[in-house]
Amino acid sequence: MGKLEEKTKKREKKKNLQKFVLSTVKIAGLLSVGLLAPNVIKALDKVGLLPKPREKEYIASSASKLAKRGLIKFEKGYYELTPAGEKLLSLWELADYKINKPKKWDKKWRVIIFDIPQKKAAIRDQITSMFRRVGLLRLQDSVWVYPYDCEDLVTLLKTDLGVGKYILYMIVEELEGDRHLREDFDLI
Image 1 (cartoon, one colour):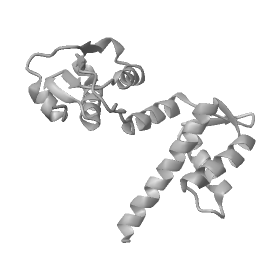
Image 2 (cartoon, rainbow, N blue to C red; image 1 turned 90 degrees about the vertical axis):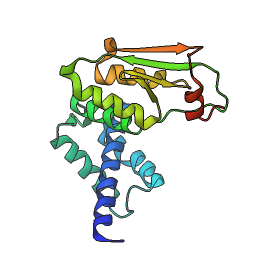
Image 3 (cartoon, rainbow, N blue to C red; image 1 turned 90 degrees about the horizontal axis):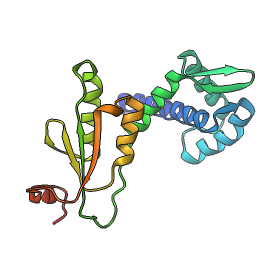
Image 4 (cartoon, helix red, strand yellow; image 1 turned 120 degrees about the vertical axis):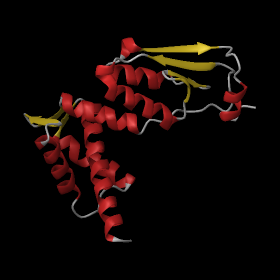
């Protein structure tokens, strides 16, 4: 493996560890340092994120770096997620989001329409990118379609990106001229 590959792998491992620590703090709400070490180490070991000898050091170092970046705070023996940490974790969760496809299509289309103002163009681009990544197809500029339930994704976008009033989710039983969509989604 080349140096660039090793460097990239190392950076990804750090990001995964930080994401794991943030997720753990979020799930537990307030997480004591005593709780953090034994259980998280075992979980990280199972996932293969940590080298064996210096497990506690890696977690403490990661938590310290997250605290310096203002993503978590340490008060009275507990780590707590800050609003900035919650926002970053939400972005990471969105980036990893996958839609579960059922074995059989229920013959209903999920149509998502959004009209996000120009002043929130970055968020609009993020939503468009997310829709493409998870497999939605664009019908028109701000109209997207998908054959399976994706309401959870829309709800996440509405709450995490603060665009609830700009996005509309519909379940449509019939869509005119949907043959090309059925072909694109391999439903024929």
